[in-house]
Image 1 (cartoon, rainbow, N blue to C red):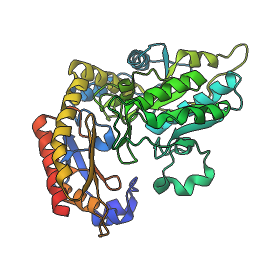
Image 2 (cartoon, rainbow, N blue to C red):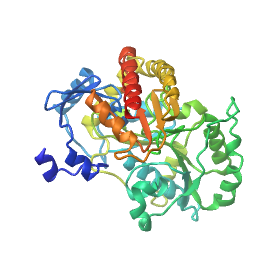
Image 3 (cartoon, helix red, strand yellow):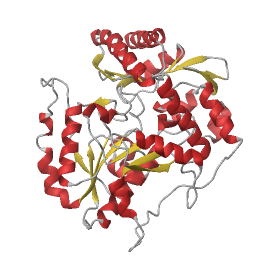
Image 4 (cartoon, helix red, strand yellow):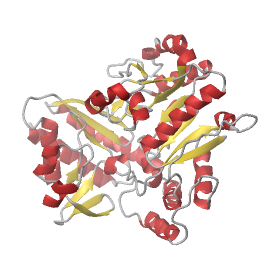
Length: 428
C-alpha cells in the first residue's frame, strides 16, 4: 500500500519488507487475523506473544466496553480506582507469597525500568550505596528503553546505543543441549556463585528471563539453574528480578515459568498476556520487605517514578476479566496439554535435513534451521511460504517458532505444525 509506505514506521521491520508489501489487518476472530483483501491468517505467534486467548474474546471485549462507560482514565498518583485495587490484589495472590505491592506500567520495558529503579533505590535505602550494577544472562532481552537495553543488550538490535548504556555484567547462557543430568542439578551453574560473591557489594539486582530467552531465538534452559541462582541471590541478599513478560500466564504450562523452579522471586515483571494482549498494561510485583523501605518518614524515600497510563481503568478491567477466563476455563492446564502435543508433533521435523534442532517448552515450539547463503535466507523463505498458506510467523534469526494462543484446539495445532513442516521442506 502506498499509504503504508508514506507515513507508517513499522517496528522491527526492514525497509525492503515494507516495499515488498505487507498485509493490512482489519479484524481478528479467535485464532485468526483477516486482511483487507479477505485473506485469513492463523496468528501463530499470538501477535508478539501477547494475544493469549486469541482475538475478539467476547468476555474481554465486554469487560472493556463496560468499563469504558464508567471510568476511562484516572491517575494513580494520590488517587485510587477499583479496577487497579482489585487487580493488584489478584496479581499479588498469584505469587508464591502474597506479601506484595504492585507497581503498574503500560508495557513490558516500562515494568523492567521500574524494577531496575526500585532495585537501585532499595540498595541506597538499605545502606548498600555502592550497589549500582546489574547482572543478567548473555543474549537476554528485556525491552527497548535504555535501562532495559542495559540489562538486555543484543548486538543485532542495540549496537548503536551502546555508548549510552550502563551495561550489566553478563552470565553465560546455560546450554542444556547434550546435558546428561536428568535431574537438572545445573552443574553449568557451578562458577556463578563465586562470580556473584566477588561483586556482591556492587550488584543492585540480578534479572533473568525464566527458562526461555525469547528474542535470542527461544533459547531454553533447565529449572535447576534458576533454582540455584535464586538460592545464591537470597544468600547474598541480592534482589532477584524475574522477567515473566513473555513467559507468564500459562505459556510454559504453569502460570509463571519460575514455578518450574519452585522459587519465590523478589520482583516479578508481567505484561503482554496480563490483558490477553487487548490493551497495554504491565506491572512489577514487589515483595513487601522491599516496598516498606520506600516510606517517607523519618526521611523521604518516595519512589518518584510513574507513567500517565499506569493502571489505566479500562486496561485493568481487561486484565481482571482475562484472569477470570484463565481460571474458569483452566487455560494453564490446557496450555500444558497442548504443549505436550506440540512437542510430539514437532519431533518429526528433526528428520528434515535442513533442521538443526527442535526445542519445546510448554506451548512454545522452536525449530532452528541450518544456515544457508541464499537470498532471501531460508527462514525468510519459510515465512513467505507460510504467509501464502495462511499462517503468520516471524522468524528469529535462524529460528522458526510457534507461540499460538493458549486456547488453540488440537486439530488446529496439528495443522500449524504440518504447515511448518511442509514450508521448511519446500524451502530447501
